[in-house]
Image (cartoon, rainbow, N blue to C red; front, side, top):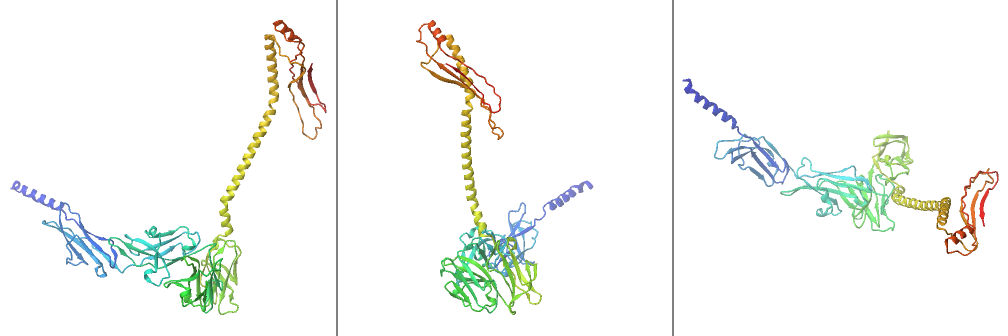
Length: 546
């Protein structure tokens, strides 16, 4: 009986094992382009099931935990998504023509927001000195997938379609960062950005506006403000003039206000412009903004941040302070006469001088750059004012001359070196010629002796007709003492004088030649002279043969 039941038991175990190995796969939801999308974008939901051996699945889509199926496709697309399409989505699958099914997927949340407005920021700051580096950063909050960015500057046009002008090099900031490595004066302006996603193309709103203000050492125009300060009281008159070297009228005073845009003084209600001068008859806190000189070609120069306040202000320079110059700050109160208060002065939140009517920095350096304000125990504190420090023109010019100075110096050194080497060569060459005399003495003596031997062997002499004086060799050792104690030193002169006189005609035979040789007055002398210094003596040794 037990043996008959064994096959049945084995079959049962086999079926159980087979069921365990064919476990149902789990579905997975993917959303493109992102789980956080914006109204009007195209969104695709995709259900993926990794089931071995299954060639075709029938899909079921669910939303917000509902049992009702709203789609049976693997991909479900919203061509223009709205806020009502937001929710939690899941899917599952069943084998077509088979018995296998998948587990339902985890829920994935789709968030739909209104059309986005990118956020534009500046690093490190929007107030710059010519040559500084600055980066504009454009971000789409809560979404970072697949965006390409474009960059624009604000124009003064009242037409919304022409309000922004695309930068010629906008594409280099497509990744979200637009960097100016060396800011120039004409980079002053108001910047915005926008973003878009492809397939299909979807564009955002323009970002918030962000001004960049660049000041320089030698701008082509100066913005002259009267009274000459950046913070002003209410209800006073204010004059802003754009002055260049030619005193031309081609400049316009332009103002930028946050959330308001660009305005030209010439076309505004808050000021009147005559020539290149803008007059404001009565200041108001709403007049706070950045003012600059605008050229006919559209370039912006000399931006100044002007603020208008009720009671207390900090009197500070309009333009950046040059390194090495002095800086004077005062605390002014509108309702006192005189308006100067005894107050405490702060830089970047730290107290630097207390209870004084004015703060003076005699020699400004780059470290003095920062935000300043003053505080009075009863009147309160003034708004903060940014003090910018720029390099002096003397330093800049000297830096620019350095390469030229180095080149001239190197040229002079090279010329001097060449002249020195030429003189040294000539000196050594002349010295070498003089030093050859002692050696020639020995050479000539040896040559004379050799000649004598050869002539004796050959049996003849070469005689000079007439009378001749030959100074064969001079071997002189002259010891000179150039000290002041040695008035006169010995001078040693050694020379040989040889005089030849012909005594007859040359004979043709050997005997006559030998006789002639004996008759000839020829002396070969070799003089070796060693002298020692004597007190004022002069030793002269010579040999004279006639």
